[in-house]
Length: 296
Image (tube, rainbow, N blue to C red; front, side, top):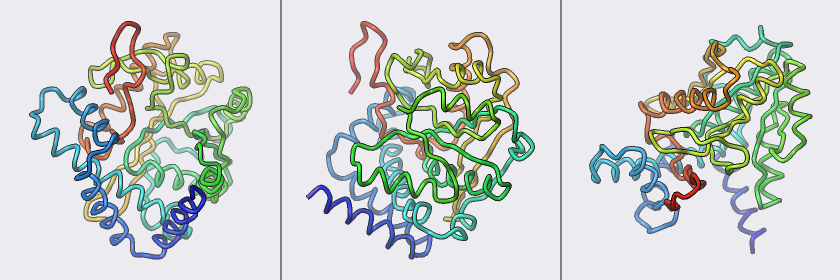
């Protein structure tokens, strides 16, 4: 039955790719509103994250944020039908590029593009790969392998269909280092909890969070510039704009904790104006500092 449901999901994504963007986005929002009415583990995770990160807000305010978060997350899932299965022209139409980093000019020099899980994360990553292809620049993205092998194979193909090379996080680090040193673009989404072994504890909206130290370590090891990036949801169902900011002058340093704190500060600055676009559905505080109880 698992394979049947996987194929049904794959089929739905292809169907959505043929529908107008506005209809797909509204369908996702409506589905999110419906699912929020049903008690679920993900709903509790969202509520817990918002309570921890925004204690100054009232319970009613956090409940409204949680409800809208579900709408935005489900919208982004529905839109993947377009960004994973739609045409080259569709992706260009619905995702703008704001390249303040001037990626083509950086080709041949080590650099890392660091992003976070906003609703447009898939749209932005695919559009950057497409943009790089326009300039004949190889692009690579680190990704987390899915437990469903059938879906994982399709997802890897969809994400790399414009020439992007998908690299599993479990792959040999030496391969990643080699590609960065060659000056090829490496996209890394770095805002999740990958456990204490790969992380350092630094604040995320005032809460100690296991935060990925790989950005600082890879940048120091390869001499890479760090480019922060985020994908903004445009109003009135106009799609997205992926912003590639100028290279960070102060990252990396000799202090991994300081670098990782700077990265989280960037994430906070991007999330604060658009709280409900963030993927609060993730267990951002799953790993706790020694001696502290779990929050989920």
